[in-house]
Figure: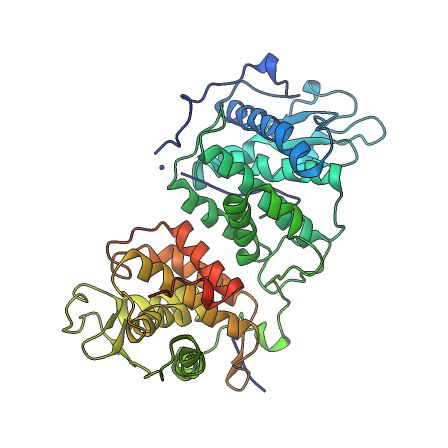
Amino acid sequence: MTVAGLLVAGCAAEVVVGQASPGPGEPVDVAPEDFPITGVSDTGIDQFARNALTDLDTFWADAYPEFFGDEYTPLENGYFSVDSEAIDEGAYPETGIGCEGSPTSPDSVAGNAFYDPACDLIAYDRALLEELSTEYGRFLVPVVMAHEFGHAMQGRFGFSERGIQDETQADCLAGAWTSWVAAGESQHVSLRTPELDDVIRGFLLLRDDVGSDPDDTQAHGSYFDRVSAFYEGFEGGVGPCRDDFGPDRLFTAAEFDPRDVDTGGNAPFDDIVTWVGATLPEFWSEVFPAAFGADFEPPTVEGFQSSAPGCEGLEDRDLGYCPDDSTVYVDEADLATPAYDEIGDFALTTAISLPYSLAVRDQAGLSIDDGAATRSAVCLTGWYEAQWFNRAFDEYAQISPGDIDEAVQFLLTYGVDDRVFPNLDASGFELVGAFRTGFLEGGDACELQR
């Protein structure tokens, strides 16, 4: 905040890992002759890419006519695999990984995966895919393929000619396909539900640099922008991906104010505590009476050092709300300070807002210790932080690029920890979805019914 006054280079994608998704049977490898890839090897990573591309082709053969009203046409010039660490020039035609009229050298794919609209083909560096799969989870490879396949579909129904819009729409289309896989519809790849947490963690690697120009033709979007788009496709399918990516779509990516460059947009720890301590009661005192017909009594916010307060249910906790004394407790030593140092100032904002939202639910006569309460608190935190994004608190400070990304990072890093939400019945992916819902739709979508 400011005091008031990968994709991989050209285009790649995201990750996944956990229990196999339901389906008609175990995934079956596709034979090389049934789905040719130029320059392909007999390695496991190429086989995995072939399996994913085959299922993508099957998915779009049905989905494209249904959602875009035209016959699906397979990629005209197919697929190319390159090992950037040992390029075999003899494995490719004279046009390399391009086509007649647009030849491309195989070494141009190094460290990347992309769709070439001039030739209607997908090329990828299998050395990169191997690295990503090893370091960030096996399902990153299919999502990379799904993102690029999304671009191929845009090549048919039309690009927007705006980088961030096209890239996040491709993320959405990848999410729609991933949901289809999770539902057990695919024949050649499978998805374990817990792998979705790794998928969206992978988006952190693939976002644009914080503070970069969102209007650049190569812009891909902030962490929140990309995760939100993927989640939208996963939850809603292809329809929202087709309909909700017009020029008026909200993006949180923004350039740094000159004042933010040196600090990365992070305000001092004590300032954040002061601002959050002022804006949370201000916000809830305004909206609570309209929602519940009663005045809001702000809870106390109190920090502690490692030893949890003597409140039933907060033993061995780093964060929580105590209804007995109407106090939000935050462990400064083991949670607040590390989150601030490792992630940023809006991680601290999120840490305080989560139990504060439970205090709101308590005053409204709603549960505070079940799955609905957890999801609602995360959703309400998204609603509160949207007020920062919409500059409702400019008298205190202004939000900086990357702040909303930090909220997502906090949920994935700390929100799934028992010391924050014990007996959690939601995955990190679901927590991020709840946050996104509150941020974009407001409190009415945050399970506040008595």
